[in-house]
Image 1 (cartoon, rainbow, N blue to C red):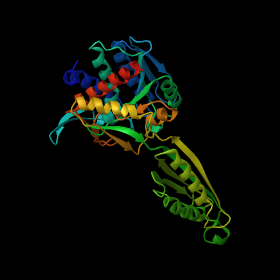
Image 2: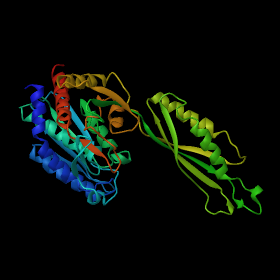
Image 3: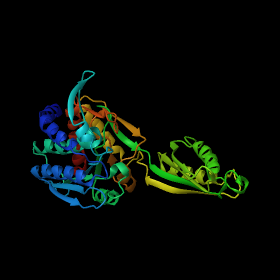
Length: 393
């Protein structure tokens, strides 16, 4: 089968894909809306079942249930491929009713909009439809294709990280279906994502009568914040931003406690170690005597770094793109995804195989439809090459 006909086949699937997309976009599925996420999962499970997949749910109490769908291929020694996406969104309840799925033309482009349409409900369906596209052409030269759709990625995958790592360790390749930004882009690396806290303990006192007896935790924290912020980009590939600050309970009391939280990211493990050491060093430089300063926290996800392990997947997607007339570019990203869970354990990983569009996490989030069939064909071409390479070993 020629690749250009695959793109035409992908275009023929658009009406069905858009029907599925409308259905799941019009379900509120914010991370903490367990009922909504479970409705999305139940719908997708039915669709997978229709396509010959076996489905199970990894049940959760706080978050929605994680969906695992697996289909066995015709080669018991062939590739085991894992495709990963998330069903949760960042949007609050009521958004689906306020601004439901819509299909329109903007700046000459056909687009669809709705809460979570780009990040990443369309990616879930792209994975499903790309595999079905190959199956329609009698492709089964693999051992297994497994989808893992989790419910908590937007808060760092706390309840699904171990599941994803376990499935990845049983796989030969992990493909993450996060948005691809543009027609010709995929994601080859992501920064780590960490949350750190600075806490300051001082001594309370009457602000008007005996302020000299106090040790102002807010003033010390202000000193720490300024010093910490100078670390931003002082280490190559590392960012540090103070994002939350709190202190004091009453206007007439010298505060004895204050804290701030910092978003910290690094492109590699060397940067992680360097910034953690630098934060500890800065915290020892006090402005106000007799205050206690403590830095705590950790990287919630490790860096998804460029590596020799991941390089073959980048080469394969570029070859698949060339057959479609696309010069694929692999780009870094400052945001984390579940690729940050699969790559650090040594599983070949590629990300950004979802749709193109823009304004993720924004009420105007959109997906570009004009080249969606080509993106589906690109994903199908990558899947085919992953399995071909494994079969040739």
